[in-house]
Length: 58
Image (cartoon, rainbow, N blue to C red):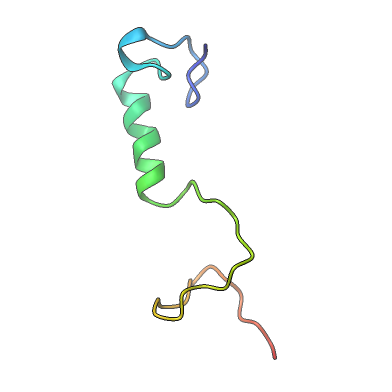
């Protein structure tokens, strides 16, 4: 199995990653929202608008 971050062989201690560094990189990606599941559902009206989403015209 190869590390999903860098592609090196996975280490048993950090499986599926090769090192703590790659495991931490992956965790950081989850925490900052880099990994997201796309959806067609409208955003929660209680949340501020996403600055990366272009405005919609009605």
